[in-house]
Length: 204
Image (tube, rainbow, N blue to C red; front, side, top):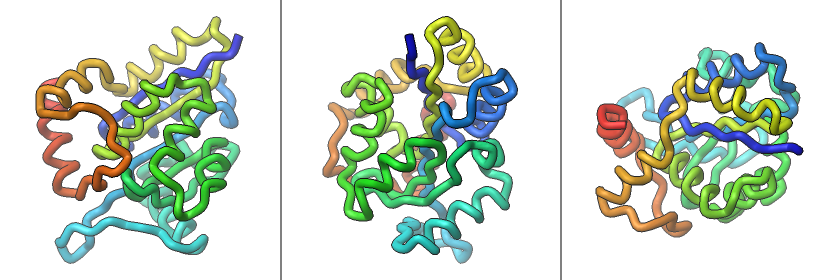
């Protein structure tokens, strides 16, 4: 039986390490997906949201990330890396078969496109909403489809690479007033992401 194992990471370099470790352990590249928040700070200081609008823009955003060494592990996946803009979540980088589902929704895709893509992989809808919220807050997701006999191994690899305890993170969000995923919520800014990342990585 096939099972989807998923890990949420605060930093993209941890997600990259997880992808490389999965591939080194013999998991197939075309079974691995990456979805990562791609909100960036402009070189001159002000916060901006990268919102790719054309195929060339998408390619540029993705190529820049790979050239900078941010997601070198994703370069080995069967499908190239792509930059996409997801309303309600913001700019993301994606790699793996999930690109087809996300890109198929088009540039005007609703935030539910990510949730739908995750549920298509076998993630329960309620959990998919939580993982989408983690991306909105600056996180990165790595998913891998495995035979259930290797599920524990995949989970161990993700944890060793730095995957967070998503249940504890949700508890922390709720303590701060979060009541559930809101597809109409505004994407986080770079400063908001860094503030939250610092807050939660010191607690969870």
